[in-house]
Image (cartoon, rainbow, N blue to C red):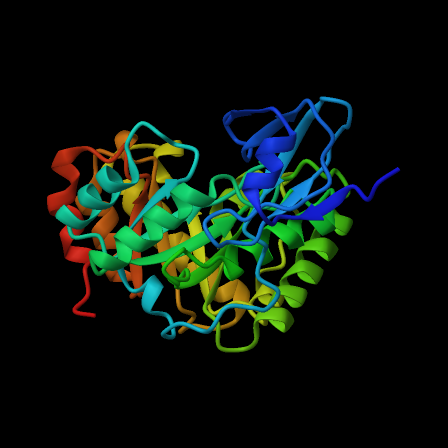
Amino acid sequence: MPNRTWMLGVAVVFLALASVALSEPADEGPRWMLTGDVGTKILDAGRQHTLTIDRLDGELLRLHGPKPQAAPPAPGEELAAFAGLSTWIDTYDTDLTPAQQVDLAAANGVQAIYLQVSRESTNGALHDHERLAEVIELAHDAGLRVMVWTIPEFEDPDTDLARAKAAMAFVTPRGDRPDAFGLDIEVDDLADVGLRTQRVLELSAELRSWVGPDYPMAAIVLPPMQLEVNTTWWPGFPYAELAEHYDVFVPMSYSSYRGTDTVITHQWNHDNVVRLRQLVGDPDLPVHLAGGIADRLPEVETFVRAAQDTGVIGAGLYDLRTTPPAAWAALQALRTDG
């Protein structure tokens, strides 16, 4: 049986030998239907791809490309992606185009976009290479920084590691890279809490070793106050141990789940930052406060005040699409000069 992977070369010969039907289903790379014998290579606009044979004899084949980066990305400016006003989007939310997302963020003073690039159902390491590249390039053109983030499941360590590495190593067609990386540590599908903790610490250590000491990484974490309310979610969450690998903590301090009045909004966000620093053992721990849910948070000014009262380096609401237009005026106070 022939080798199941061929490197792409000259398209003319290929098209002469095979009848090809092209389709691009959602969440997958282009697929090629072959009805003839194939034993050659294709060159696609000068870019090298890999044609992976899923099934032979006229069945579907998938075209993968470009080849993933083999080396870690170059480091970005230290902590710049975590300073000031942020907002959150993802590559599978297509209600707005990348241009509309970036325009909306820039028009409202956002300084950093936090972009989810994969999830459990992602076919491969990253969800949508083209959309990811477009968001990064447009954001950089508008003067915005981009943190890419992934959410490990902890049931398949190899997949968790591959997705995080692919996010950090991603390079757009013109050579832009993400400015920082965040690991969203919250999934509790793995029932063995001890093993879950072990795997997140091993993943974090391996990522830091791979990318080097200077690349900005954030631990996106469950808020301490939430774990004190729900004691079964993740007992013994390793805040202090994670601080060995990450530059910034981003607690998901969604006070809208606790209540929406002024007192709860301020206390929940304030206390989560204070308690986090106590658990890590660092009163000056760099924190970027994630608040929300945006369209369920009437006390936006109170959220901003809590962020200011705790001296965080930045803050923002989850997420861009659900942030009410009236909320942006209050969020402007979170901007920095940088």
